Length: 212
Image (cartoon, rainbow, N blue to C red; front, side, top):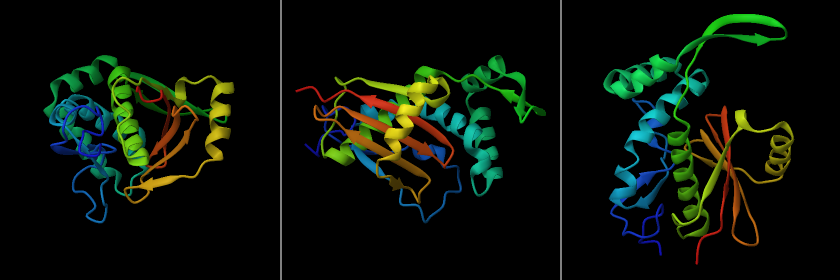
């Protein structure tokens, strides 16, 4: 089973894919990080390039200030936007000025950007499939759907229930603790996942059991 692609579970693995995507770590990268990889077919690996580029920009904007060297993140985002007209167009077309509030005080103005939710979900789904392979030693398979729950779109009661569940689970740290995940496997092999990037951005997922 482990000679098959960890992501689709159908094709032979001829490459290795980074889980999470290596692109979210801007160059020059820390040589001390032992980046986590899983076996992948060329179709799954190469076919994710577009989603990964946008995810890289999104993650840089949402977590950049929490990196040890945020200026490197800013420069990396600028290079990506400069080299990808499609991403640049989306950012400039959707950006809007907003004001943040904290303790009833208006803070400095900021810029809000809307990202493609479908591409975001594809990247997170791929991460979950890779993590499933790590945990179970087999591919979840593309036939099993994965539902993604970004924290900013969750209803308060549901968010609280997920938080209470995740608080009971053991964390698994990857990439020098810059990426952490928790998972609960149910009796039917469905699974609930919580992943956090750079100690800041959290997202949850529910994966259907693998199809037999």
